Length: 149
Image (tube, rainbow, N blue to C red):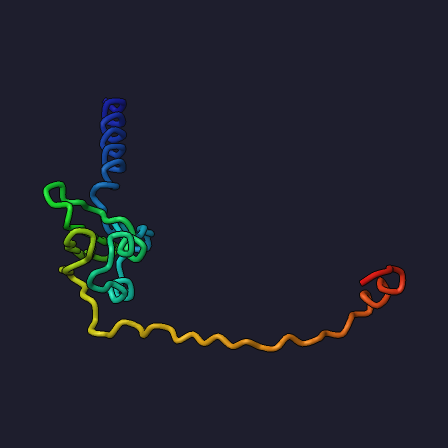
């Protein structure tokens, strides 16, 4: 009788300890990893988008789209999902619409802020006169032992 009782207690305790991992989902002082999925999207990236940008320029700024609509090649979807450990998951979604190869419209959780595009650079070229540089000590020593220029 005691052997069967020990066997029953052992089997119950083993089943309880293996089931603890599914019962205790948020144990304090236990590290949970941060889970990032999709394309990382932030407001600075969205602010760089302008109307009439080409698809290549958009890929340079945001990366390749996460979802391509098989029925419409003119829509690109970017989704970014993050779940920090012990916190709720949040998600940001952006849909870009193209007409041909040019960006036409943006929808989603983030929108470009109303800021003007940066002004074109004003480059000025100045021709500076060439100046004669004095010879270094090494060049003077070499010129003593060489002939010509």
